[in-house]
Amino acid sequence: MPATSSTVISLRLPLGSGKRLKHMASRHGWTTSDAGARLVEEGLRRSEFAFIDFRDSIAGRQACVQGSSLAVWEVILLVRGYHENLPAVARHLRWPLAKVRAAVNYAHAFPAEIDQALDENANTDFAALSRMLPMITEFSARKPSRR
Image (tube, rainbow, N blue to C red; front, side):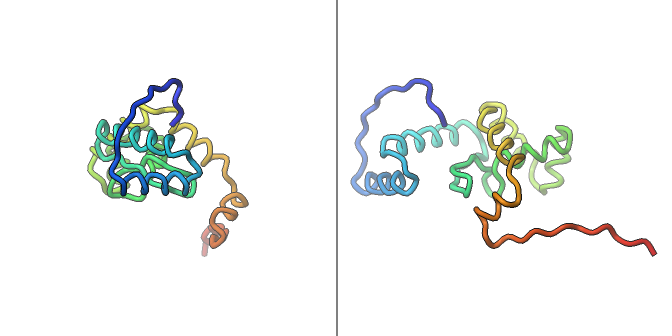
């Protein structure tokens, strides 16, 4: 979540929260200030967009749809594959239409974030995936034989 300009806001955290914030920052290689700013931004986005949550993934922190394992960009990939037919995507995922719309609403509000994730996905080949996920194996589907 890039910031073009910023403001300084001082706040007091309980001791335990401060320790947890520092631990999270350290785990991600962020400054404590950057971790706090990210969490505030994520909290604001959660309050502004229904069904949106944020999770750590192998690709970093991502906006995800609550109650699922899908990142918003993955839902948008399906939406594009279904030519923007949101009810068809909802049926495909066995979700209420509102969840699909929530992902679309988030993507419209933060197109650069979603487009970057879609570009990264499109440019990731098997070699790159196997470095991130050494347990994966490559397979190819064979065309069924005619008898």
